[in-house]
Image (cartoon, rainbow over all chains, first blue to last red; front, side, top):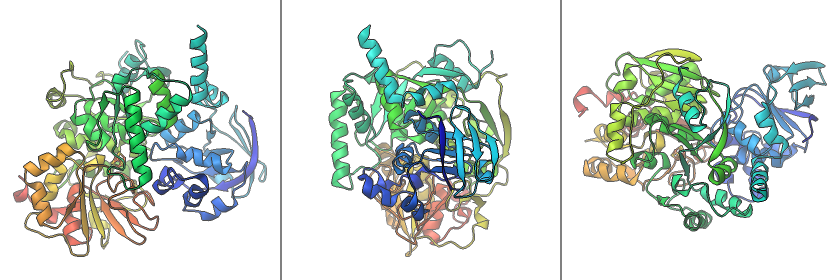
Length: 168
Length: 423
Ligand code: SF4
C-alpha cells in the first residue's frame, strides 16, 4: 500500500449516504451501467472524476446501509482516499475490509476548496492542502485496521489464515 | 469491573474476563444472519476453496429484500441462494417468511446477551432483546461465515433515559425520531446505545424493536434495551434455550446520559432527505401525499397494523393517495388477518402486499416516481431510497402514515386516533 497520496480534491457536504453512492437500481448492474446511476446528486462528478482524485467531505460520510458497493464504487471511480470530518461506521468497516482508505480529519471540510491539491500520509494521517499551504492532523488508523489495509483487505487475511492452517 | 451491555457481550464473545470501551477484540458470533447476500458470500468462499462453514447451525439465511422476485436477475439470485444454502448445510433456511429482523425475532433465534452479526445495517433491531446485533458487509460476512470471528472495537455506550407519560397517539417511532432530530444522527456514532427509564420499561417488545432498529440511524453499533421479564416471556413461547435476564452492571461507565422527556411530545416527522431532519407534525406544513407506506422492519408489526386499522375503521383511503401495507412477516399477516385488521384495511381501500421488505429499499412493490411524495413508516428517507431521486420521502409513525392515507396529506394522527378508538 502506498503511504503518501497526492491528488486533486472533490468536495462534498454532510450526510452523504450509501444509497447515493450505490442506489438500489445500480446493484448488480455491470459497471458501465452502474456508473450512470451512482452519485446522482452530482452527475458532473461521475463524468469528470479521474483516477487518483481525492474526496473531502463533511460529517457522517457513508451513513446508512451495509451495502459495500458504496466503497467499491468509489474504488472503481478511481478515488484514492476519502478524508472527512466523520464516517458512518459500517461504511468505514467495509472500507477497511476492502482495503479502501478513509481518514477522519476534524477541520478538513473548511480547509479545502474543490480543486485544491492534497497530500496525505496514510500512516500518520497528516493532511496537507498544497494549494493553501495548510496542514491538519487526522486520526491515524489503529494498528488492527492498518494491518488489514496493508494486506490488501480481509479476504487476503482469510487466505493467509487458510494457508497457515494447511501448513500445520 | 462494572460493564455496560456492550462490554459484557464482547467480553464473553472474546473470552476476556472484562473489557473497557476502546479496546480491540476478536469476537465470535453467536448468531449469523444473511439475507440475499448469502449467495455472494458463499460464492466468495467457494472461490477461496472453502467448502465448510465455521458452524452452519449458527447461520440463518432468508430471502426478504426482493421477494417475490421482480426481475429474472433477482429470481436467479434467489435460486443461487437456495442452492448454496443447501450445499453449505444451512438448517435454518427460512425461505420467504418475511423480513429478516422480524422473522429471526419471532422465531426465537435471538437471545439476550448474544452477539449477532447480520448482512444488514438494521441488525441493531436485536438490541430490543438485549442482544448485540450489528450490520456488516459482504466481505466481512464471508470472513465470519468461514471463521465465526470478526475484529471489533469495544464501543463506548450512551444511555437515553426515557421519562414521562406516553400520551395516546404517540408511538415509540415518534420518540426515536425526536431523538434523531434533537441529538442528531451522529449522537451514537462509533458507540452503543442503551435505552432505559420507565418509558422503555413499559414499552412493548414491538415498540422496543422500532427504536433499536433506528439505532443505526443514530450511528450506533448496538442499540439495547434491558432483557426483562417481558423479554423472557416473549422468548419462552419461541425457544427451548435457557434464558436469563440481561442488563448492564449498575455502576457501569457511560460516555453520556441523556434524559428524554416524552410528556407533551407531539408526533414527529422526518422531512426529506435525512432521518435527522425532524419536525413536530404541526410544523411540517401542507404536504400532500401520493403514497402512504406502512411496513418494514421498523414498523410492520401487529401493533402497527392494529393502529392503522383503528384509524381506518369506518373511513376511506383518500382518492388521491395509495395506501400500501406490507406486513413484516407471514406470521404478522396471519395474526392481523385473524384479528380482523386486514379486512378493515381492505374495506378502507388499502393495498396489502406479501410480507417482505417491499417498498422500503426501492427494490419492488411500490417504488416512487419522479415528483412523487411518500409518507412512510420506514427508517430512511435518503434521496432515491424508494425509487426516483426526485421523490420526497417523509418518515412517521404508523399512526401518522395511516392518518395521511385518510387525509391525503400529512396531518396530526391524534385527529383520527382518540382515547375512545384505542382498544
Ligand atoms: S425492511 Fe427496509 S430497512 Fe428493513 S431490512 Fe428490509 S430493506 Fe432493510
